[in-house]
Length: 312
Length: 312
Image 1: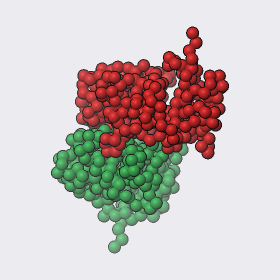
Image 2 (image 1 turned 120 degrees about the vertical axis):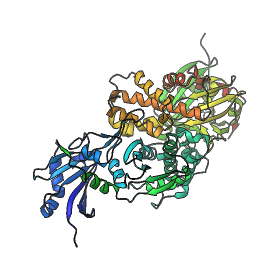
Image 3 (image 1 turned 45 degrees about the horizontal axis):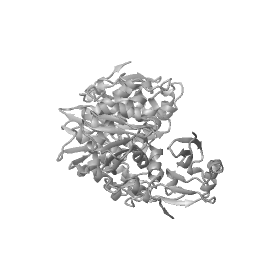
Image 4 (image 1 turned 30 degrees about the vertical axis):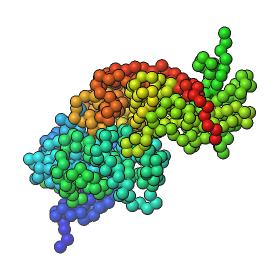
């Protein structure tokens, strides 16, 4: 029996727009992606761009409600939605969302990001990851890591996201491997496969008892001295640095109290880094529960199922 | 009474060539600088480039000995000089230097860099800073820091440089402020003055008891959350980040055992960062002895005064 489309989810970021047509059973019936990220939208013509992408779905299925996440809800987007403060659950996030109606009458709900007012030294923020955490589930008390350009470590407790902290790990990796002394010496592998042996060496160094392991500015220079000393090949450098950087994130997260040896953590999100994080976790004596790779959509549906948001 | 020129010191790096005509009393009688860095020298025509710069001095003062330091002594330079291992003093460094004669007969001595074979995890290296340390003096046991793109912490003991460690602090600062989320938000100050208040806030955070201070990947995100929270102005960001990065270097150096509260350290070299390092040191309960800003030349002269080097 064909499923009935009931909503449209739009993940609209800086560089692209992705839209999904979703059924009452939560299945994705259709999906599209354009390069129309918000940085390319002139003169605030967001509605025009959205309609160009999803009007055929309206034409076929009627005025379905639209749910928008991503930077489209930020100051640089269509409608800035204030952050909701932790502790927060799906109900709190739904209450913080904002709504407007398209010219055709279809409602667009802009979901809120999340703010940790107890961030150190300043309140920390996320915009999108909170939806993934809700989609992963808030029933069980647990610590989650969401790998990415700006990774998030988050704590779920008593049914709410209670706190989180940002680590700019992915950005540090990109800076080092695109613009630094490492970029000048590294040679990407001929095939695109991950060199797990090189990755493990970097991660094990960060996880180990070396006195330099707490000194990232020093230990990262090993990407150069390893080459000079013949201990590291140019083709191994990128994955060695990847392991060293992600391992350093775990080490720093441990020193901030995010976990202790023997704990179980969840690794969720789907930005392509999860396999690397899964590999590092055991080096810090962590057990891992994996996400189901569908958290963002499930999170939107759970937040959408809460009470109707306030208009603007 | 006019002083007699006795040698020519050439500091020949990747981007520039700097030459000094030096007297028997160690005074600089003349100085020149060209943009003829080694990266611009085609087909190994180093001698031609050198003569174009300093031939007038030969013509006027005769065939003075030349001493070369910098990347000209590296694999990409004119004559690769193998590193001398720590522990080392001026005599050891002189013994490791290499010499060739110009077509006119003047000898050119290429000074050696220094290698710490006990570097963690790989042997560490410097090429140039060892000359500055010798010029500063090896008589007193002390810990020295040489600020820079790749800062060096070094220990002088019993008349020798016994160990050192590289911190890529200046490079991390440049990457963050030129290419990252910080670069997009920061606004340089209208006047070029350092905003010491903003600098101190960043440094104090790194020096303080915040749990995040050991987590550089997390605490650096404060350059963004501070803006979002109205605690930091775009014009304050660069000096705030400078303080946070240099403060983090001190924190990491402390965890590697380079100093304890109450110690005295020397801050030497002359790359324009010394004032910032001097300001951070007291936040870590360190007393500072400053260099005399002339260490490189003095170091060359001290090494030159040792026994004649081996030919090639």
